[in-house]
Image (tube, rainbow, N blue to C red; front, side, top):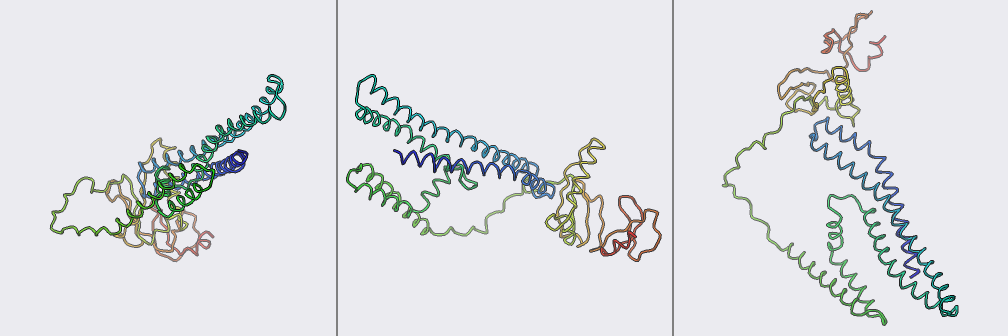
Length: 347
């Protein structure tokens, strides 16, 4: 009985509580990064608005789950402590009742009420041990797309060798004198039978003949509206050499500037610009880009690779060598220069 109490309180309950605290802390700390990753994928056009909303909802549910499990672990630990306190109260109170009300001797009162207390404690500690173990399994489980019950059954019954080992251990316990032979041997027989059935089932799946190839003479399926990709309201398409400008992993700041421009326009004008999809287009020239409105080309241009546009704001004192260009925003004249000559142009 003391072994069960120590295992429940010191090992399982304390370990599950610590795991819940650390998981809740790291989950809350990682929430801003996950939200930014969802926004980046949405701005880049990798996901749509519905999928982004689903991902944000899943992130919120994950944080709520680990936060709730952190609090639930405190309840489980409190239940274990309460069980120990009730055990001491029953033992001390029972001995006092036996001494002063029933006129029993100290040895007789201690033996009788200690036996009753241990019996009541076993009835209390076994459910508490099961609850603590279940809480530890739920908190310490790895993230998976399957639910807990299906994942648990897959891991337990996925390999017949696991059932064979469990059946052998229970069968050995059932052969020890003084143990409940019928219960142990029955469970061992059930687990062994499940192991044999799973092994035969796996061999049967391996021996199944492969499916025949699909007949090429079958009539093709008609095209439906689901086969037509949706048209974005606003989209920015770039050639493959301009991908570093829109890829944050390569130091591109275009997505951040687009987000800031949409936010600034909404603040100044009171209108929210629709989401701008950013994607590469192999049909464009390597250094070209274009802006589409509902699939219609409304603006396009070309950016020389490795060069920047030096715009003449009316205060230029010297002359720079380079290809003439024009700022599409201000319509001011400029010169395309190498990126390494930025400091020279500023002087």
